[in-house]
Length: 324
Image 1 (cartoon, rainbow, N blue to C red):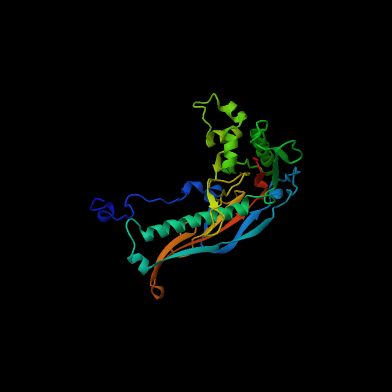
Image 2: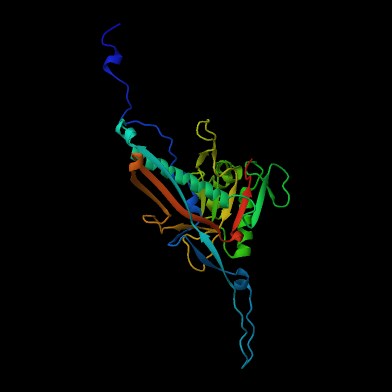
């Protein structure tokens, strides 16, 4: 055996310019984009709601000479929000810090990991609050064959009519609310079915590039935007082989929401974010790092304070099992 051996002259150590981390891209997460964010200075409070029936009922009457005008008015109600605080921390022990190798940066890694945890939690909370049956004014159920009543043929079927299905609900909501739904939120499986649907492909074949995009499908059905939630999660606990699935499943949600929250403007939902905690931003989140001398460690901590509220059920249509 030649001397010196490779092991004598080189000891394996981590490369300083290469590392592997499965960090999901921020654009995969769409929970903060669907509905307007309302930044609030108090953790809980009230907001006003006007009665649609009163605003839409025509009550004007002809006035005779010298007679009083007809009188009427509208009702005013209140609803409430409460921004619960969600938090998580990661500690870095002094002994671990003293023994760390390049290219590891423990503080950076802790910040990135905690930020990812916050995104995962908010996406999960949003899906639970908004993306299911019995939440919105209209539920439509996708079936594999022979749809009846409130059912529709699933959009992965070449004989289905997704464009007509979506347009019909846009018209129905507009008739009942005066607001045309302008957004649709879908999962990747629904996006794959829509982008390959023969009806969609036929309608875009003479466009400039003939390439299916979210903007192109949105324009076909009359929406401002289609958002695809690409965020995925591991549903198994630590120590078990990961079980991964998309948060958004195989469903679709059609809603109306203004670009920003404002007075006298309806929306299907709002996100209330509490910025009252010291250092919190407009989305109600903050990251802190502080010393824990009793534990001989440094703690990095993330907090988020928000409430997800359905404001008007009439402004949403849920397509359950839009694809098989």
